[in-house]
Length: 408
Ligand code: PLP
Image (tube, rainbow, N blue to C red; front, side, top):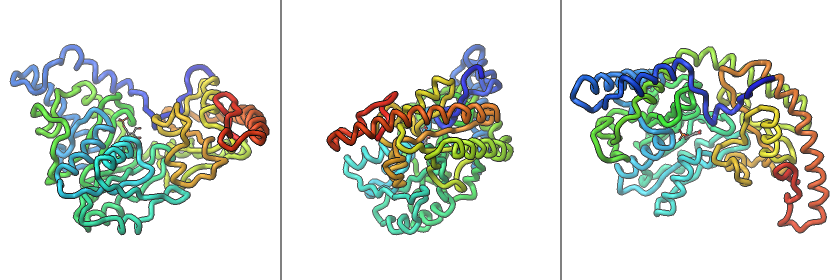
């Protein structure tokens, strides 16, 4: 099978050809500044307005002015959380979960060091939240609640509607990181008591470097980026026009594909899952198999090292991931799988396959054809490692290495 087989769509997706084409004129003939008074610039501003309406439709916002363009999902998460803290300066408590993307996790850890109190809600073995724990965590001092919609590593979905009702009843602002949900499932913010919601273009076939933050009308939102008057004074900086136009079109296309993709991509993902569980002994799925986005499979291979599997998959032209891009390259086990109390034998051997509408059954079959030999090869190294480890001091375990270091 020639070319790259791409099963890493939660990391990023390819830009649709029609999206790339729609962007091109904004690098060439339509290069005006949308803030300019002259028509050459202000016509570009109209294209931004059109993209705003397209993005508003994707998330079901009542009014496009509630959509503010950002540079990425990380910026949206930062702007939402920092904005709510600034809007409510007397309040020093944040509620979030242990399984957030580093864009929220890292910021909240930073804020903890700055003196904020953070409640880190745990999850069960399926990756589900305990809503009673959430209820009990909310106090008069809580400045905001920030909880993701779909987990980037496992695909597990949190019940955003139920969470929103609980949080709204206490009058606390609620931010949702919907970066892995947008374009994959229907979102209707106008019917949800959600105050802020982050999305990122490159997860639904738009380019990297553009995102959006939904800010519900009426919410006090001190800007994170301060300077010019762009984005109604909420996000200063000359707009990334081409990327915004691309994101608008990608949003419109995604909206038209959600129903169809959630059936066809799920079918393909489930086929991959069933085949791998059958062909690879000692494999298991991490996370709730029902309550998941359609495209994500997080599967562990017992005793193995996920990164070693990725290297061997890569040699066969297959792109996958161990989970969060930020965890890749580090030997640390995933914080998400640890929070789910995945047993030690299975913790290191997780691989995430995240599909798109461009994957085919032939690709699924190809992965399944290659995987058993990879597992067998690494199992041999791992067994050697385990044998070696028995003669080693405890703190040296796992040093007997395979490709990167098969774990014992
Ligand atoms: N939140 C989640 C759940 C994500 O999966 C990601 C990226 O993978 C982000 C936030 C950050 O988005 P970006 O890469 O656009 O900064």
